Length: 261
Image (cartoon, rainbow, N blue to C red; front, side, top):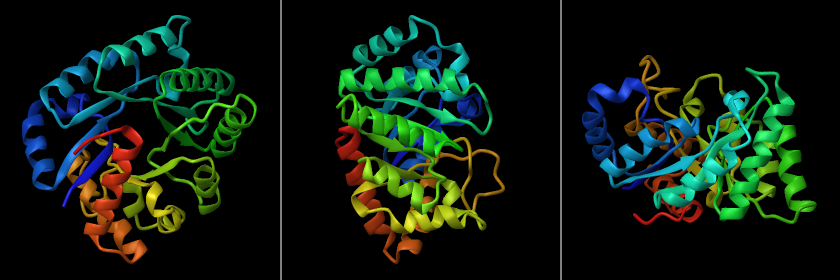
């Protein structure tokens, strides 16, 4: 059985003491590939070093919406240059909108659209962070499709939306990725969304070190090996086997990010 964790942050300090042991555990759990997301371009050198150390890691580059105030005129060129210079870059991001923790809506929208421009130019998918901003993200993506004519590919990562919102992004051609939140007891809307996503658009992730899934909920640090618990919960919700979900989500991740496993 093979699994792909499509969203990790292994460069965070919490992994520094025992990253080799963490890797051993993800290998034992059947995780054959990981996509390392990027919070800001300044950390890309760290991410790049981890990807060079571990052959099964691909990377993204971008600026998180909660860091949108750090955007400057040259950053678009910086992101583009990093993406072009590193063969392991498979996506732009994470980008998107977060109206839960920040109210600089206009700044976030400008930065988000700048990322979409880069992704369209480089023909790379985008990794989208969306929190309490589903309507606005949908409007931006629809504008790009309907007005600008650019087909933006990508994934709604760590998805926490309702089934109705989920369908919006499926209709726009996006993949939907579920994290440890799908295992939480009261996450009924997320679980309903996981049950209804079309099989060919389903992805799994940990978003580690955040959001440890049940039965590791009490642990402060999540890790890639735990993506198995996410896949197990989705299999249960959909009435499928773990092996079937692992196979489908691995195939989907390879299709979206151009991976070979």
